[in-house]
Picture 1 (spheres, rainbow, N blue to C red):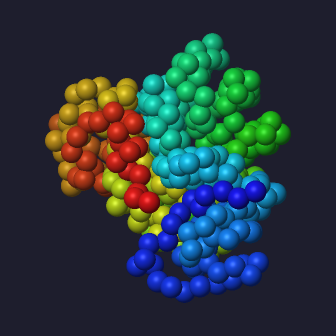
Picture 2 (cartoon, rainbow, N blue to C red):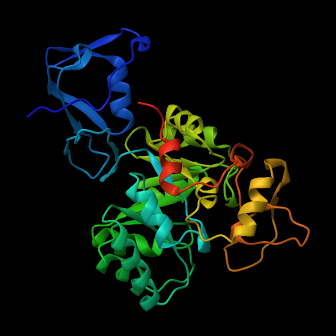
Length: 346
């Protein structure tokens, strides 16, 4: 069976060619497909713009699966099919079901933070998401001491994609994998990546030093992506974030070798985020020079400095966390419009 190609090669991409099954393909096609875990297996496409069948390579889930676009551009992230290579970062108590659902409805991957919550409250929040969308949503476990009943509640509600961190990943990975879930593990160095992969992570979330909120990386994002690719090659998808604010930033991290881009501050400054209106206004009036990487060990977040806005009352809360891309954000928008604007051109 054949299907329409996911991408069409622009004329300025050059004319270098290769042959597959006796057919000629532009090398740009192959480089883009390989970045997202795809390879050409048959067809009469390539430079003549015909039909092509693509196959997802083994890094995604241990076996190949056909990818069939449905008239729109599709991006494959492990076993998750997206319409745009955008992932919303965890925002603590500022994200919420409405934001997570609207980001996913727009074709990206929304995220709901789960932090020290009762199962009854969690079920209601998950139900609010499902009332808005059936698309995949990432559940981020940010608390140190979650009971096993917390991820089980999410699994029973039909959620299968989870983000973990160094303090809770080793404990949750086995439970999630045994239940058929996908594990996103946030890392800030190649040593942290090794631990994540040893524990069974499916996707690495690369957080550069430019990120807002808690930062546990000594490397700028571009260097971190390069270090992770040196360690993993193309076999592990990498979602990269830290200081990103617009479509140009997204395109840039994809060119560095990331599989998708993760943004937090841009979605914090959305209409749907639960940050206080006054905090949003303060961030929109501020610029990146007014941010500080605060090393104090306060609150219940594990030891990590936090990039936040400096205020007269020295407030330290997630509604004032922001990354170095803050200066490039000037408006408060609906989440769906943010996703549309962040999507790099075809």
